[in-house]
Length: 171
Image (cartoon, rainbow, N blue to C red; front, side, top):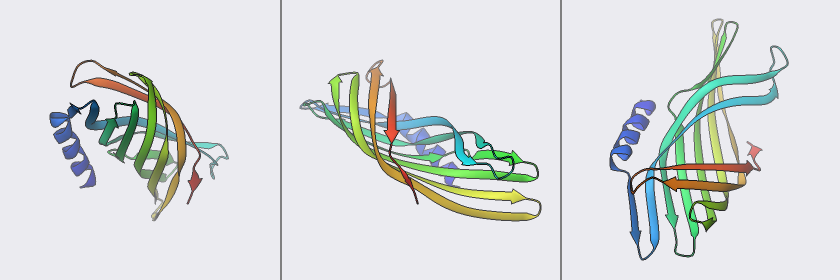
């Protein structure tokens, strides 16, 4: 049901994404999509190496407000539409993920800027197979700093990219 709601919300926002500018304040809202693969650096209990999961798609709403002083504020909330998955023998690991990002930054030129903010990632995992099932969750959160770039093709479409260094702690 959660995936259905996320996909429905994504379709609604894609059909109604908007940009608004008044008194040089620019407001953009839309859908952020991220196809992400995940690798755990913790030793794999089976073979001692790292655990690599199949890619998962995260989708959710995003908003950005840019002031006349080139200061911007942005926020997004992404939810996994597909789970991260890994199969080890009879065991199957599935991980569902939610990300919250909040940041403030400065655009040096209209296309490039720097930012600082906060990220919170919540993961719910399930291990099943061999007639047993186990589940749990963990959270990763903390400050971040990064570099942002964007390019608008027209009033409705553009691309966005960022790279960030996260200083997170696991809970």
